[in-house]
Amino acid sequence: MTAPYACQPQDSRGRLWPERMSTFRSPWQRDRDRIIHSSAFRRLKHKTQVFVELEGEEYRGDYFRTRLTHTIEVAQVARTIAGALDLNTELAETVALAHDLGHPPFGHTGEDALAALMAPYGGFDHNAQALRIVTRLERHYADFDGLNLTWESLEGIAKHNGPVTGPLPYALAEVNAQWDLELHTNASAEAQVAAVADDVAYNHHDLHDGLRAGLFTEEELRELPVIGPAFARVDELHPGLDPMRRRHEALRRVFGVMVEDVIAVARNRLTSLQPTSAQQIRDMEGPIIRFSKPLYQNIKAIKSFLFTRMYRAPSVVEERASATAMLNDLFPLFLADPAQMPDHWGLEAAATPSETERARMVLDYVAGMTDRFAMSEWRRLCG
Image (cartoon, rainbow, N blue to C red; front, top):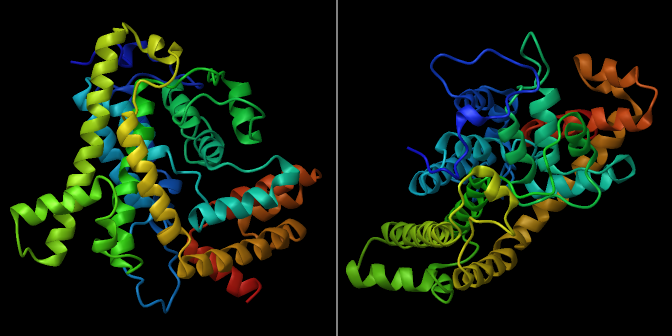
């Protein structure tokens, strides 16, 4: 039983291309399943979360998160929070599973590189690219391009991080012109849950991965808020615990603190505001799903530590420079000679008289690459 402020399947605004209702799946179960079966979702397996899959690096291995395992962890957190708040868990999971579909190879490094390369052609944003993927680039169905997701799923992808204002990335502007996503309002509570679940997941697993990579130590983490008390509590309850178990026990407590805080804050706000519909959530001033102010400040301190010691660690910066150089080579090469792209990509791009449209086709191709395929193409064409 969901709350009155949850999104209700029977109230869905439907799909751009009308389809017959399933006899055994809700609209958002179908959206979720289409995302899981999409080519873009499978490619997340070999896309960077933080560490690039470069050969020969002593700390590279199968233990580090990829964009796919990160996405699965976000979906798990989103289901947990949505269930605790009597929201629609299927919609929250759908938005969580789709939220990173538009990420290019090499993570945020790749996004920064492609944004610079695309500056003359309308820019690049991974959220907008995710919409382009699910509305246009996935081409498997007989009756339509894309996945023909419901309005609520598209809305969640577009604005799970909040209302979208100012100049729109071209990919988002195209989708919004075709179907108004009401970008000036908040997203549904379910999409807000997916956004917070993203924060919870990456703050938790980046601590795990940074420790495993040797970029910092448990003793350094003990100086941080939330994390220090978690280690102290584990040492009190389990003195002499095996180091790996100690690490896991402490960080799972950090994970629990974040999830419980979000649920408590949301329950208090929902009790105070008493929304009676999903639309009231959208029309509110600010999000209903968020961290408490004290925990938010503590998380900022953790993020600052991770930024300095992990995301800007010398070994990671070296990888970032290498990845940027590869994309800076590949993009202009394909733009100048579309025949270097395979199959329909090259033919369509070569037949396009507009340089802007050609650049956007090249972007679609390059942004869809996995890390290893981008490196393979760079070696083949430039190395």
